[in-house]
Length: 251
View 1 (tube, rainbow, N blue to C red):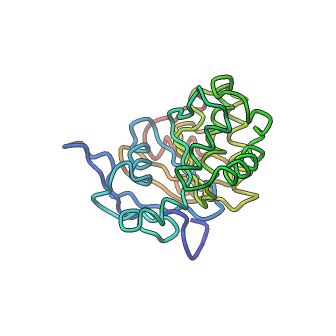
View 2: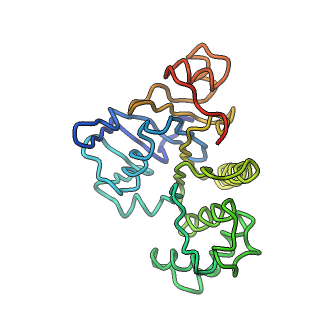
């Protein structure tokens, strides 16, 4: 979307069905390196299905998905090592400390204990959680857990981050903190981000936006262009005009 020779994420004509129900229908868009791209859609739009295809939880039967040019189906190892993921459901082991959670994840990526400890502290500092490294995960608030999950996803040095409805269940301050931390990663580290949400106020003026509705992409591009092309006043109005539905403003 922001002119680039190699997209961080490329989705080309991807379709997926559950039996007779088509969840995704010829979905195409891209995420540029160093961009914050919002995949905006109501619950049931197909966001989580697409997320599962990109992360290889499901295999895409129709279409192509590539991460920095590496096809997810043909080169899953090369593709997925460039990807960091934060799932909607909380995935920390509550009985382990923050650093133990990170060390376990690092081991899955073949990172040894000494290097894992070093990377873990760096990652926690990036999300302002280094002072909680030895605390049990169950002692953290929902927003703090989410920040640790972001730190964990950064351990192996991905260039693309996927976050699936990452602010669900968080209060207003925690939501703002999470969005702020992720946006700073985009600005300061040239990280590409695909952020899925049904909340209209999580879309920034400078973001790229993909409007997904009933499995189809209705608009994709810079937020200002999506608004202008829809003849709308703002992104909420554009979403309503495109879909005939109203997106939520807050959780």
